[in-house]
Length: 213
Image (cartoon, rainbow, N blue to C red; front, side, top):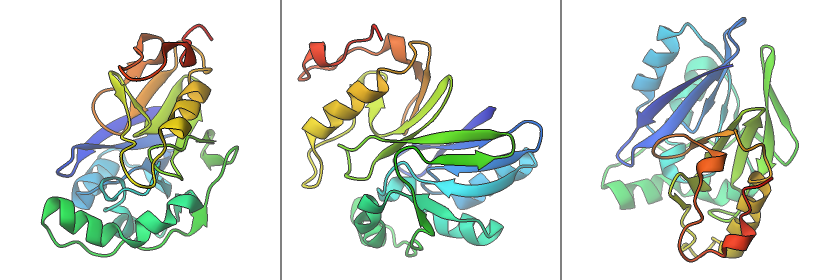
């Protein structure tokens, strides 16, 4: 499995191109903006995208989904509990960036815990990791986790939105910290890191987040 990080948009969101080396079948994770840039990267690697995956519905993770969906005629997948965020993404993006945006097309399919996303000879398993948003998910393949805004090298996702939940976020982090220690976590912003290097942030109970699993 090959992974290319593409940083996009005003909020410097990590979009990931993930592909099977033999078939070049690929998935696009969190295309937050700059569709032309993402398209060039896909062309550079001669990839054949199979679907668009969103870790959650915040605008900075989905704004390029419509253009990519139309360019490749591929489905857009997200958890159903974040559909409300998709529906208001255009308005939210304008509020935070000051720029007008095209509406984001509604998803073609909803994903849930345990679903497997296949591309060529590779696949990613869906892990439900709510807290930052109600429908936040992570995508896992042995050795790798794409966590969206759940967890970062030196912190966790925001839970100060009306629809967020610190309690759910803690449960989700506890779930992914049961993965092997050498798992590389690819977050929605900033750089990747090994799970075993993560430090419990201030304000969270250290005993919740045992790194010994």
